[in-house]
Amino acid sequence: MVRPEDIKGWIESNLVGAQVEISGDGHHFEAEIVCADFSGKNRVQQHQMVYGALGDRMKAEIHALSMRTLTPEEKAAL
Image (tube, rainbow, N blue to C red; front, top):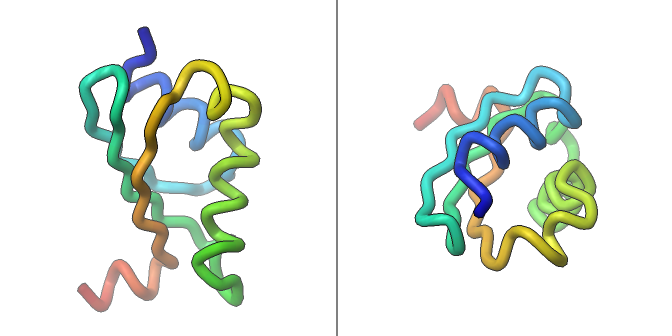
């Protein structure tokens, strides 16, 4: 079973400098991902970056992932 810590590690190892918070029950997960590399990209592009970081795990191991992606500037403005 996939743990929130696993997803956090996979994202952080593939999106350098990302700050990741994950919660979930092993099947459904929620993520907040803050990454400077998101700057200048729209939400779809940002989500594609996260899916790319997770690779094939999104097809097999992770059944549902709801995510909020932010640049550091967007996070600071909250």
